[in-house]
Length: 322
Length: 302
Image (cartoon, rainbow over all chains, first blue to last red; front, side, top):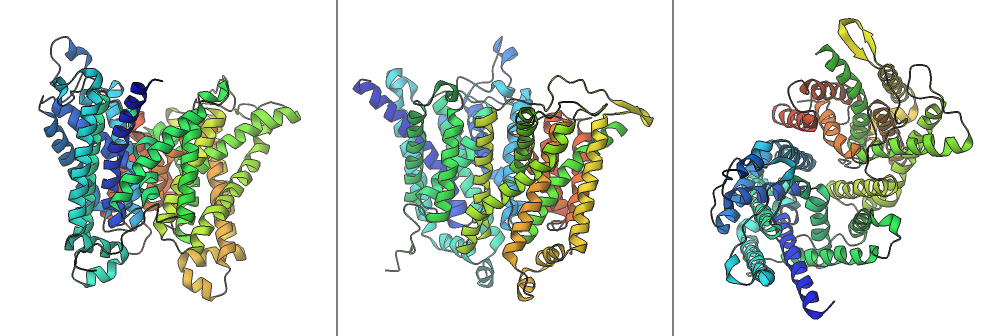
């Protein structure tokens, strides 16, 4: 492979890992700071991607309308897609939070798992909504006319990094505020936090909604990178499980760890792809599953031997405490 | 409609076998075991391995019992697979959950670890058997019997219900009349009190995993006999299992039995109005309704 090919490969690697980093940051608000166990990230991933797709594409007309069904097509710029994805995911998180956040921590997990599977079923079976299993294709990419299509990925990498940094700064700002300290108090000890007059349900709900909005943005970034989306892209493996491994590896409760984990685990994931290239021919077709098996074992090892992850949590988050 | 209810009872019995184990684990060991669906898959595939592999190699005849779709091979494979998955569940407890207990990890860490376990089991099954739909006896015609009310039921399904009630009956006797069973109920009721009374909780945990795993395996095999085998079958059972467990109150095995039948019937009856693929969503919606109206379940204290 000549040098240009390697750089192009690295750019696409950095884009995908950057998108996953946005998801990790969203999950970090929920799990890392508040202790909310959301295992339906794939659901928010899916809804974020579809929402942005429907906001930014025009509604099919003429002959295309026979082949492509979508309930909405607003043909608005990319930024509206990002914001719309965040808003819709926030609303869904709010609705999921109502029945579950007053109960034990496992209930949220079961409910989010259910909602992720349900969304996938709906997008797969309801053709009128977003074209069923065939999904939506030809999503617009922002600033497309700016450069030669061959080097467009550089532009998208800059967009992804900007979004990632903005999300990072936003969360850092929020976490270092009194609000963020309440989240950690809720995570550590609900009873003493509520004895200090904090409304546990409200704070959990805010963290759930905030984190899910970030995940919605991640879904939108993914959709406009791949240009084509279908329900099968949002499986529990690629949509939920790997993001959990990333956050646990990087260090939950640490935003730098969330980003580091995303890049590190994505590198491991890509690395194992090269490894499985050496497998005998008969096993090649099952290579992705062998790779996921390794990622699953990695998660178990992290949970037992290094639950704090690579970076671990910062104990002091207030600049007023030295 | 009567026919759908009968099919729902069959499906409900299978769900109940999984849900009882899930409820026991939840009540006694204290976390949501997201790998419980995969125990069902593991049981079904272990039986497949015995029926099509080991037993044909040993030379056990591949006959069927009259109008049923299985024969001696399945009769031997069934208890073997239940024992196999019981050991698998205990194995995961020894290598993973016991270590987390030793570190005093929070319940969510256990749940996350079980999520990892679920992916590990599923990936191994896909690597070994692939992700196609499989049958214990491919290409076999399975005629249905006509019974009153115009209901068509396959002889297999009657046997499935019989086995479900037999296993639940055995479990009932075990929990009511044996020392270990009583100790398990005591631990589910109040862990601290059980510890003070000198009950060895590590032994109880092993028994709980064993029973939970064995019942899940039975459920998986019965589903394989009734419908088909698929590497993701257990994952798709997970939401119905949790719905049944929560509906019947966590830790209550009779509740899980009732919950299983309720969810199974609701899922099958829904196919009269909805696409069959939405069965999972039906279980999910019921679960959300329970959480909103009565989160402690029908048998729970207020």
